[in-house]
Amino acid sequence: MWKLGTTSSHDAPVTLAGLWHRFRSPVDPEARRNLDAIWDGIAPELRTENQMFGRHEEGCGATIGVMPRCDFACRGCYLAADANRIPAMNLEAVKAQMRILRQRLGPSGNLQLTDGEVTLRPINEVIELIRYARAIGLIPMLMTHGDSFRRNPGLLERLMTDGGLEEVSIHIDTTQRGRQGAAYKYAIREAELMPLRAEFATMVRDARQSTGLTLRVGTTVTVTPQNVGEVADIVRWIQENADVFRMIGFMPVADVGRTEAGIGRVDVETLWHEIARGLNIEPENTDRLEENQWWMGHPGCSRVVIGASVCQPGMAPQYLPFSMNSSEHDRRILKSVLKRWAGVTFRADRPAEALARIAGMVVRAPGLFAWTLPRAAWHWLRRLDQQNPLGLGWRILTGTARIDRLMIASHHFMSAAEMATDEGRYRLRHCVFMVPVDGELKSMCEVNAAGLRDRVYASIVSDVNDGLDTAA
Image (cartoon, rainbow, N blue to C red; front, side, top):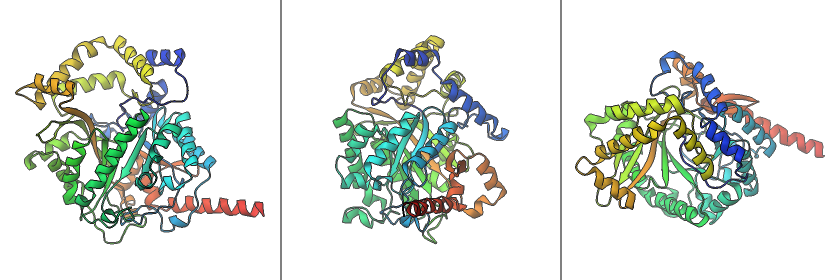
């Protein structure tokens, strides 16, 4: 959810007024107001230096009912038991959800286009929803198992060119059942799915090259006691392919929806120990990785590490976290950037707009760009290669070495029993992941575990039946 990057595909033309607005206000005033309102609502004990909710991020929102049906039968699934019998919500109702989320998330807000497998809906309707989200100022991320792209070559490119899709998240793990191909359909080890991950990486690279458009990609993994021991292997693979996958989110399975009974649970400490192992961090230094975690709301809900992954021929990938605690240099630069530019984002900017925004930032803080950032870059090179930092810099510039931004996150959803506790209610107060239900924003945990998804599905069925009665 860290807001970085530029895009190259928009419908509206670049205007002088738009360029001037970005130059004059690098941080959108609406985004700043939203952040201030969120920050005021956070409990004082959660307003820490590593808290991003209300400081730089407005959180995330998701649709519901877009396509309840899914053609997979996963062991860990948060959908309702009768989801496959529920029709898709009409387009106008979904758009109404987006408008509610736009008020909360602000300009360039993070929208997850989800609920079931969205690509099973008629593709022209999926394109319409993506375009509408972009038109009202949201950045839609299509959440998918990805097999529709494998079964329908060219579908991903069409969503990019016709819909303006810029973000997609592909869920891949051994809890899934229904993949195309005998090697993947009943995979029981994550190692069996590494060729599938490589297939998606190639697909994304090809789509970017053939369209000339930006596509930011994440991947998610449901974690169970059966596959937690392979989390480190997944992390190593992601580092090697961080040019494609900029984010990986691990989700310990929760006792909600139609999740298989007795599948087991994974605690946060065990998960992050395995993540650290994948980053080649020694066991005695695992606490150091935890010190570099950012919070999004309550730390029991989401934890995030943001950093750079460096890949060089013949060497294991290196990961450099970036936080208030990663180094004193990083602390100084982050304090300076967040003080001036908290809430800034380039994700919806075309190149000219991004340059105008950067120019506005340079005019307001020339020392940051002339001195602080170059000094920080030199500091990072020295941390990565103490013997020859200049050589590493040259290898990165010439493409011999590759440096990619990589965010690693864990998301911990609650069961109904957990929500009923004092801590559960406290976590709900600080939820960063919201869903519109009956015109109000509700926590995704409430949607998953408190019967709200069933309520939405019942309303969809009722609306369809009312329409049939009217037609009759």
